[in-house]
Length: 553
Image (tube, rainbow, N blue to C red; front, side, top):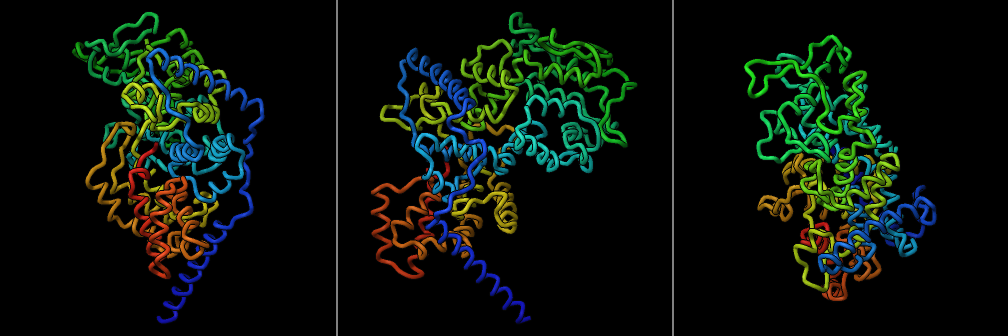
């Protein structure tokens, strides 16, 4: 029994020394990180991206002149890098990455970091999860026939490979097979009603999911009745007509042949035509499939799901591109160009910026990586969130300042975990580090409160959330853990100023101001030993609980 305790003690000492050596290496680091393969600041592709970003900037400037608005100054590059990390990876940049950024020429640091993120599994995993919420929600779904993790892993692969988005959506709509071997079919198995008479995906739920996720239109309220208020216009943008209950169920009819069999999801061509009892009818009637608008783009030939997929992703079916660029903008900014993100009127009017992005998205083969680079290159993404003039609602609505948005639960948890490690916690990090982070992050999100599918709704901080940050085990545990950087930064730094700079870079992605430096250094100079290290940990805890840490700005 005693030998077990000796083994445990030796293990902890070894881990502590390893952690200390990593911190020491980071503070004195001289070897550069591996450069992203797609970082080519002088290439033609970057020039084309910059041209589109300038068109967007010019459009915003035209609005500012028209509305008589000033635009805030450009933010420093570290602030923009922090935004990119939160939006694309759900975490903060590490001190290791920040030190590398200091080697990159000013003016290219954001481009370098976005390139790094797009080649990093942190981003592909995070963005896959964000988009999975749109496709299959956040619940575990039907027991046995739904594998959400498998679905997210598949999406992650598509993101990392930068597969054209229209091809991804086509596969979601037309794929066959078992939910484990063909992970895209989890889009269908998620919509199997548990305990229903038939073990088949529900066409009504699929129609509602399709309209919101791929078309950016909330027409699922037409399931029960016609649109009596004129809120939903269909047919075409040039000749809009008020939505009918029949329109929705004609869309649902495209899924009427889908069934779950021994070989998984498949089409059953011998299945009866989709039937539904409309509001004014006395009995069910067969409803033929028909797309709700842009009907000239549907050839009317072939398998129903293939017809639907071809129509949804058709280059002339602009709602598909519009909702995608609007959602990606919302992921990176915290809110969309049109709000709600999935409620874009067919007839417009549309923000000119969204049209520029949608047109470029279509012309360049639905390239999501290119879309991210364009958004990150815009002045709107790189402007400050404060200004030397009074910021009004008009400034905020027109993107004259970067919007202040509270961090999402997974962003808070990811940032806490990363801030207490000077090295980057990515796919190359030790497996024990990643496993511990995954488990504690999941528990934190569960207690903090997951926003669910309506993830862009503005929510204020609750008392429970504030108490969790102040007294929760996760924050206290990561700050006080002897294996993490707060326990080592102090005694491995040559002086209090260096230690303080490391703490600020790790938590707030910036250097301390002169006032902050003087305040904390005056306290640190009077301490030594354990009291000195404890003060460093107290500063860590204070900064993590600051307003600046908890908001994207």
